[in-house]
Amino acid sequence: MANEFIVAIELGSSKMTGMAGRKNSDGSISVIAAVKEDAASCIRKGVVYNIDKTALCLTNIINNVVVGLILVPIVCTFSVSMGFPPEVLTEVAQVYVGVGGRSIHSVRNIIQKDLPSDTIVSQDLVNEIMDINRGVTYPDYEILDAITLEYKVDSQYQIDPVGIQSSHIEGNFLNILWRKSFYRSLNKCFDNAGIAIAEMYLSPLAMADAVLTETEKRSGCMLVDIGADTTTVSVYYRDILRHIAVIPLGSGNITKDIESLQMDEAEAERMKLKYGSA
Image 1 (cartoon, rainbow, N blue to C red):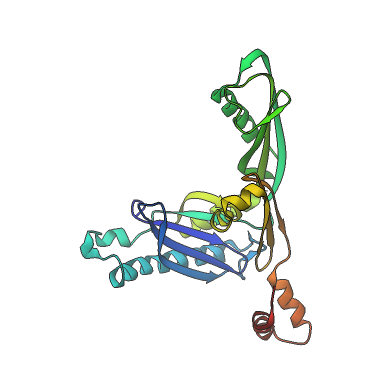
Image 2 (cartoon, rainbow, N blue to C red):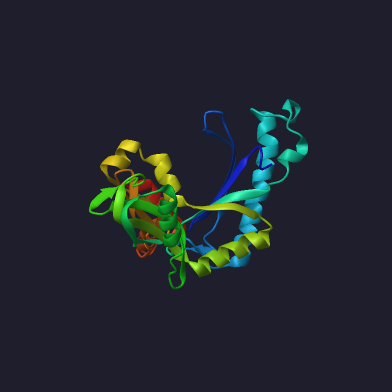
């Protein structure tokens, strides 16, 4: 399964989404199956609070994805007769997991290193500085991703300092953190569901890669993702993520405001979707 298909699951506050696709020769992905599960009863503001219900939703997603992989190829593009044995389509070995939510935020960090006179910066030295940054500890948090902003070589700022002569170097990093408790809860959910995690990635970064153009990232822009319980803000400049923040406010708050006009939740949600304009 892992050799043929890519399976990804994103955990949102209102729903969990599972997708399975196959990588094409040009690097694009053909989506073969997509399923959703209501997450309102187990995830709040992007953070798991009911482990058992989350594990059940994950199990349902995987089961439905497998059904999609069995049925859709036969009807559409792929079929067992084209060389895909039935067992390839009936199990998911591991999944990629997209995470976000209120527990995520960014922190800038600087790693400084004095060098002997006339030292030429090497790739090994740059890797060492990156490793030192990765090893920084934060109370109750751990580093989910570390983004290199730039290096200060003596008094000059450089994106790639390798080969430059210097006596002092500073690495400027943007560390994206999440709560350790969230990481433990998430892993427990997947363990209980019997699903192996191939890799965890930041949903806002994946969204930026899909939505923003290189010109927008280079010239500078802000990407705002309004979810059900949270709004994620990502700021790009000169091709690099400069800041990320999660605000505990989402479209669900608008529904609750409408509910305050003596209206039930379902009707308030329908009114919001019908007349809302942004």
